[in-house]
Length: 121
Length: 464
Image (tube, rainbow over all chains, first blue to last red; front, side, top):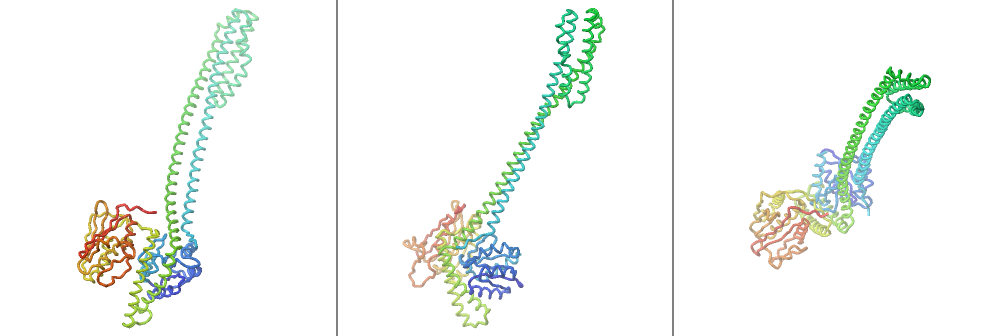
């Protein structure tokens, strides 16, 4: 996928590091945010094509962030992939209009899902 | 605890509210339309009724007056015959009331120009007749009855009377026609009113029905969304959530880091390095699978698992598992085959979870079989769907049979080879099948082989 931008949101630095590395190797541009506030800001400034959103974060959780994203005209239409530790590797959960993946899934599978969503746009 | 405020929920609720207001507004409009049309109708009916009453009054009035006039004439004749003044009473009565009578008549028939003209003519004729009678009375007083008789014989008096009678008859006829018309009008309007009211109320019912069914549908949607919300909140706030996070987060970092290096993204890797990185990868995968099993078990037990039930084809599912497990079986030199019943209907089950169960059963079969074959079969038995995995492995003894579905149970084998795993697979499978309201069981002959089967009912009851 040529130069599509992904916003990664996760409170764990190591997680951001390893996922970013693989997404960049796969040809995506990546921006990262460690908390909800930064995520909202970056979403507005960087206008990513997809947002990968961690659910469990200390201050503002993924659900809240998604809710706030939906309230802004700039960000309301960006597809969101939720990422959670609560699902086992093979579980996929549909949450509203969005998809929720297990964090323990390989990043390669995350990339496959991202490509699928982008090709549907 | 952080509450998730889902905009979707609020949007859905607002939609429900707005539509409710819309529905009320439409119903009010229909009601107002019905009642205003109806009351307009009533006003017209009242008017027509008043006209009808008027008309009757006119008719009565006319006939009464005509007879009074005849009485006056008769009275005069009587006076002529007897000379007694008392016979003139009717005459005097009419004379007194003529003017006011015509005024009244004019008033009642005020809306009718034709009648007004006739009333004028009538008044003229009546005045003439009264004058005529007066002249005869005076004549009699002056010249006596014989003179009056001569005047009567000329016939002019009678002529006038006949004219009056004809006129009154015409007026009478006219009023009767009007009465008839107006009565018919009233009847029609009453009918129309009933029709309008009926149509109006039917419209109201249809509107109410449409709105209520739409609202029901949206409210169900809303309830589902709310339930999703609650699921998320529940998922987050318990022990499983914390443990999940603490175990899976570091594990993910480790796995991904290894993958990054192995893929050459962090620089070139030599064979020796690859070997040991692969060791780490294998073992991290083992850990990950263990964590998944433990947490799945915990989730299933805490009743927090929701089945994603859809109409699915069990044969397709079996084929998918077959595809996944073929290589593993062949690596161990085992033959794996399928015997699928082509006549099976689609039934509701959670596809991912049933794949999990089948994979577990086939995996066990491979694990506990050294040589021979594994067979997956699907079929229908007494209106329930049956799936079985048969192997030619070492089998399960009678004593061990009742333990195999328990958690953390592993049947120890006689050779000291560890078979790996922690003994959760069958327990999880059992939980999943039971969630589907099905049954899972095993049959075995030690040394010959084992068949583990499960059945799914044709209608799976949804647990809320």
